[in-house]
Length: 266
Image (tube, rainbow, N blue to C red; front, side, top):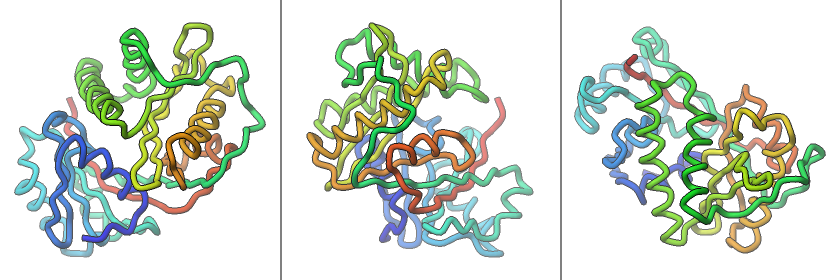
């Protein structure tokens, strides 16, 4: 199955390394056995948006390929349509699914944003203490709407997988340090000249201080230079202010990505 969407195509960089991607013709099966609670690491990616008769068929495929719910606590479908057309989603929404919209932004060159914190130092993470601080930052930044202990387990497994990719020479995790304090971080991984940003997070205590813009700018420069990327890819919530920060650095909205997600309430 040829992937049209640049967003999903670069998502698969991580899935192939940490798990498996199996082509079933009109859909892909993505599994991450090391992190079974990772919704977007264990899902089906369909070639086209759902039609009027696809609700039952897609659910049956998920049960067959990923597993029944329970014990699997989620059901997720990606749609490989760069226009962001969700298709016939009302049957899914009636069953409690949410439609996930993402804007995919790209850049081949970047510029220093107008709001840029020049006090922080941006560099790759080095020590175990910095990785421990990064885990704490990730949990503080992204655990909203998740059960705390379950999210900690998920985030720990995800960081382990990304560190393995870094050890394999596929990317880096950059941090923005104020003195010795990690205030924000992001991952950048490169494959075949395409760089994909991953998990951009700023600690809640340091937001709205121009730190994220500086971090993205410096990491992007490094990606286009030392890491050999020809184009950089960023995924963002179209309704969240982060997309505006990325645009201030020179990223341009290129695609709309859409998916369907249901998660068991804990």
